[in-house]
Image (cartoon, rainbow, N blue to C red):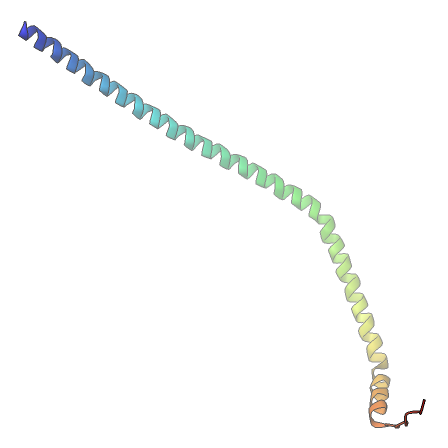
Length: 115
């Protein structure tokens, strides 16, 4: 009976080891699948991000053309006004300097009036 029990116990231990190996393989397979799924998801996310980034750049390029043109026109207009002001200043520059010097150098003191 003891030999029979011993053989039965040995069979159970062998079965337990085999089951343990099967469980370990299943865990490894599950881990591998999870890793593969994660890698695939990362690839999909990157592809989606690139697609959206390209769409945004296209949208931005289409909608900033008008702004760029308006900016260029405003800069041209501002440059024209600056040149106009500079020309006007150069025209009357001598007269302004002369008037300033006259006001500083020709002092005519006026006594305060008694009020």
